[in-house]
Structure formats: C-alpha cells, structure tokens
Length: 287
Image: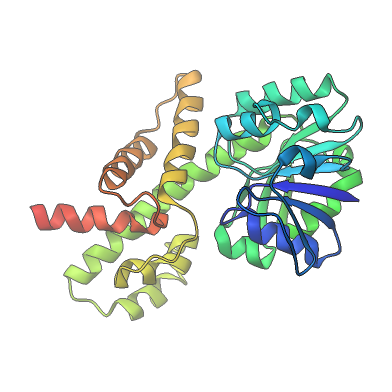
C-alpha cells in the first residue's frame, strides 16, 4: 500500500515515522526541501506526493488548512485516484468533515474523519486514541494504519462523528487541565510537599491524565510540548460552536477558552497547554 502524508507537525511527524518503521511506503510532503533520508521520501509538491497513492493521510491545524490541502490552489483532490481513501487526523469542525466527505465521494474517494488524542507522547509510542467517523467495516482495507498509530481505536458510525467525540474530549481536557493548574498553585502557596501530594492524588478519585503527565511541568514552570495551547483553544472553539448550534451552554469550557485567549495575548500560544497554570499564578500576583 502506497500512502502520502501531509502535515508533519508535532503529532504528524512521529505518526509518519511509525508507519515507515512498520513497512509502509510513504511519500512525505515538506515545503522547504526534497531529499530522501533514512527511507524517508520527501516532496515539495503535495500533488506529486499524493500521485498514484492508495491513500492520503492528513494531519494539519484547522478547517482552512484541510480545505487548502485538498481543494486549494495546489490541492491534491484532483490527483487522487478513484477508489482511494483519505484519512484526516486533523481536528476540524464536524460540518467541514461532512462537506469534504460529500465532495470527495463524487470522485469515488472515501474520506474518513479520524481526530486523535494523546499528544506527542502518544504519537511517538503509537498509543493515541483515535475517534473514527466511520464504521469498522468501511475501514477494513486500511484498519492496520490505525493499529500502528493508536492504542484505543474507536469507531463511530457516521462522517463527522469522530470530530464530535473529539469535541467532547477537548471539553474534558479543558476542565481537567484548569483544575490541575489551580490545585498545583494552591498547594504551592500552602507550602505542601507537592511531590508527595501529587503521588497521593494519583491513586484517588482526583487522578487524571494532566495530573499524571503535566503536574510536574506546572510545578517547575517548564513545558515540553505535548499539545499547543493555541491548538486546544481552536478545538474549544469548535466544541463551543457545536454546543451553541443546539442551544447548550458550556460555561466551564467557555471560561477556559477566555483564559487561553489571555495567555495567547501574552505570547504563550506556542507552549504546551499546561502553561494554563501561569494564569492562576498571575491572578495571585495581581491580587
């Protein structure tokens, strides 16, 4: 199976490397150079990268980026073969996924939304959670791709459903990260032995992925990139828009979105989402 991969960012790059390591013939689109290194085949032209491929894998930032990859001035949709497939690992709006699915179906190309969760750690380890907007039966011909990059592979029968589930995921991420940030700051102010505190909390009802994996970063104010704050802010906007479309309020998610906007205004958008704790610290200092 010959594949093309567009979107070699913090998540996409390790995903592509896992596929190559597992024997896939992968064409990689990279804007600034074209060279073959360690079995990696780079192309500076996305159309050339996708030509004659059985499938295209996309992992880019937002609706506009996916639209550009497929249907922009140098979009690849016209060069994709009939009976090929597109797996979109990007987090975009459900309505955009549905629209793309319909457009590609007219060319006899199967598009599936498959946003992921698990950060850079999960991408490197092949332990991502996958939210697939299709049935298992529809994906049988390429389900091994999911097995290479994901540990939790979840099928939700219907285009756009993967994006809807990812929206729920990001709501939960917002609340848990913010709660861990508040708890870490309060603990420091109380002069508690925070390493011992975190160890105790991890085995109780308060445990969460952010507590397990990002509490230390918050305590020492160092933020190795797992998932950019600005990307989570984008994802929260999708979730809030989805809720607004059915007249549901998301007060906690909306508040976290406001905090993220302030941090982005301060130039912190490129840092890991664990930088949320700096807002809590800043409120304390201003008060």
